[in-house]
Image (cartoon, rainbow over all chains, first blue to last red; front, top):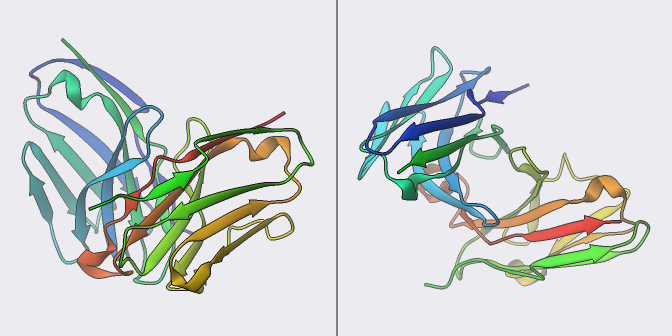
Length: 112
Length: 116
């Protein structure tokens, strides 16, 4: 049974720092992995989707990497800004037709 | 392009009452998902539709929850009767298809349900 874990549950850093959010999963036979952002009281916004055959994806200041063999993905945020404050969730799909399993998220706070 | 629409945004009911949520996905999206998100947790998939067929409903409490997708477009999720532990945010999402790069999900704002 796939389990997805995100540690730490909360993180606070000063503005301008580069930071890394972690996501680990127990079953390495994944189809894809997605990173989402959730603002308080809002739905989720997809940030990056990495297929199982890919090692990383980049969008602006965001870079997500995937290491299936170790069951890990990281989301790298460069030059953090207060507007990056949100909860970041990762989600794993095991096959094209399987359900998506979410982690519990990391609540990120960027201090001005 | 219009996003995923959900209504109502908030709902307060007493236990044992019934409630229904509505979702209108992005036009042309074949796949529709309903999630339950309890405070402090990640979303849990309740049901996934591909057009108007059910792909996965393994985590849907079928004794009280039901969902349908009319003509492969709009969807409703119903709870009857509600329990205290059903208090959560119910999120609807859609994607072009399931699999590949078309798997990117777009979420609605959610419906916050409080059961008293």
